[in-house]
Image (cartoon, rainbow, N blue to C red; front, side):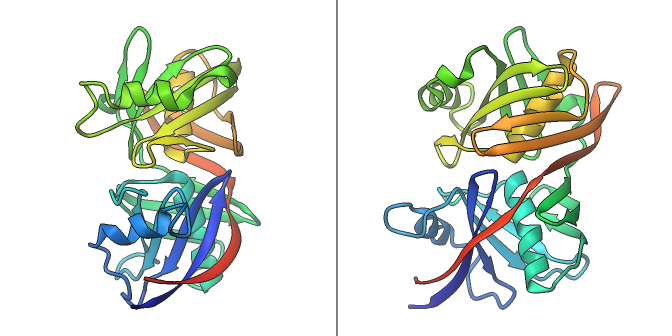
Length: 259
């Protein structure tokens, strides 16, 4: 049984177990490791597991696992990975790194991380009368509503996520309330977590794009249960380009666990 040193990070309440895996101590193909570490009753407990690994072309590679062991892009997790890489001395205040959905850049300003997201092509933005579906590195369902504070996000989100259309691959479900032309409130049900989380980076990015397509303006300030985030981008011919997710990333504690 191996003893693993880990760090707990959070970005607007989205919390992660982060491990320096440059020595390849953990097998990145073993999804049961994420399932164990992310379990809030029998493990450390988190919304995901992040492994930091070496890469020949970029500063580092971030490998992200949801609590169920599936891999995906994670915006809040990426900001935490960047702060951890700075802590490890891999980077200073700027970086280029590889994640599940490709290459990202980031700039660190104290506890705030500016993270470049992938451009979102018009083909990845689907508008329907009642909602949007957008892939911002992870697939998102975006629905505008009023009084989202009263929503049963877990129940309503699960109903959409497990509907016939989305059950096989899963989808994250976001409820958005407009506050002004450049401000929205968001609550998110995350697939892989299968519950509401305090914040979702790829989710607020999808919501910000939907908001601008609905007549809002960039940059968009987003209020989540876990705090404030900002998304800025340019809309060109129906595609979102030069997309940046901006928000905090903080170390919470360090620990050790035997696997």
